[in-house]
Structure formats: structure tokens, C-alpha cells
Amino acid sequence: MSLHLSVRKATEDDCKLLFDWANEPEVRKASFSTEKIEWLGHTNWFFQKLKNPNSLILILEADGSPAGLIRFDKDTEQNYFLISFLLDEKFRGMSLGTTLISKGLAYLSSGQQGPIVCVGFVKKENIASQRAFYKNEFLLESESDDNLKFIKTIE
Image (cartoon, rainbow, N blue to C red; front, side, top):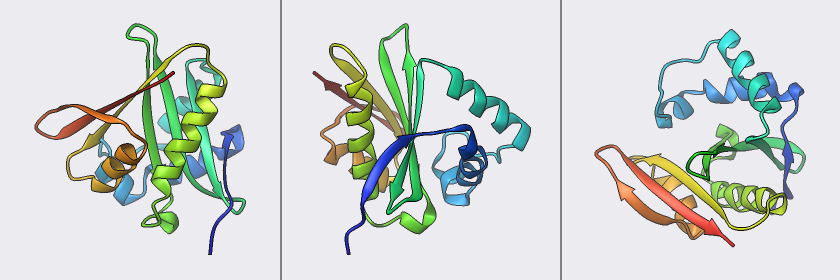
């Protein structure tokens, strides 16, 4: 069975969905900041991100149901986009992280001029996310005690 997969920009209506996803135990465990996210802090953060021209939040939909998100935050000083992504627990283990990154990069690059540099940091124990970056032809740029840094330039 194949799913119809598409991405769309996040809207104000996605606030509660993203809050629930962000606090899901496996997402917290894979995050660099593992403590529970509070509602007020989340809503302030989310609405600021939606208004920020250097931030793009996309929702992956599988047959019309929200399945995950990918966020691109532009670091204007170093001129790259930092990638964060997650999948709803119902859609994990289906290799959708690879598709999520691929569709997210296509959406991002369609609105940009010139080369785009994207960077992702992944905890060493997060093999699924590492695999998704490798399958999208990201290069392992560096490694620290607890994480890996992936990079890709899109011409």
C-alpha cells in the first residue's frame, strides 16, 4: 500500500498538533533539549516562527493526515538553514523521514535564489534520522561526543 505524501506550510491551526508531537516521549528523547515543553512557551515560540521570514515549518501529510513536520531556520550570519524534523509515532518505521526531508528541501529550494546550504544535527543514537540524511545525500561534516553534523548544498 502506498501513501500519497505531500507537504504544506504550517498554519495557526497546527499549534496543538505540533505541541503534542513535540512532547511525545520518543521526540523528547531524540531532541537536544529533552525536558517537557510547556503550552505557553510553545504557543509563543510557534506564533513567532510562523511570522519569522527566516523560518519555514512544513507539515508532511500522508493521504491527507498529518504525519510529520520539517522546519528550516535560516542562520543569517552563517548563511545556512538548520533542519529539524519529526514523524508522528503512527508513521515511524516506514522510511518517511527520507521523503519528509526530500519534499521539504524541494519546497524550500523552490522559493530561494542561488545555492542553499542545509545543516542537520542528530544524536548519535538516532540511527533513523541519520539514515534519512544519508539517503538525501547529506554529507557527514563532523562528529562530537553525542551528535553528528550533516550538511548538503543544493545548487
